[in-house]
Amino acid sequence: WLVKSEPDEYSIDSLRDAPGGRGFWDGVRSFQARNLMQQMRVGDLAFFYHSSCKVPAIVGVCRVVEEAKPDPTALDPRHKYF
Image (cartoon, rainbow, N blue to C red):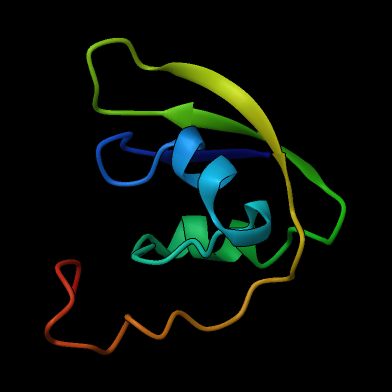
């Protein structure tokens, strides 16, 4: 798998520094990406890719620790990706 994020929004360092090294992927609005995330299983590995930055690159590897669930921000009109 490949997961991507803009490093100024959520970087691999943000994931590392999160409680328990666990993060929640929110703001995904692409149906294709959402459907692929639903195929991820606990224990799967993913490359962590920094996008939309000076040097886009794979910056690490992360592990899926929970299966996909609905994004609570998807229907929040105050969320920046609504």
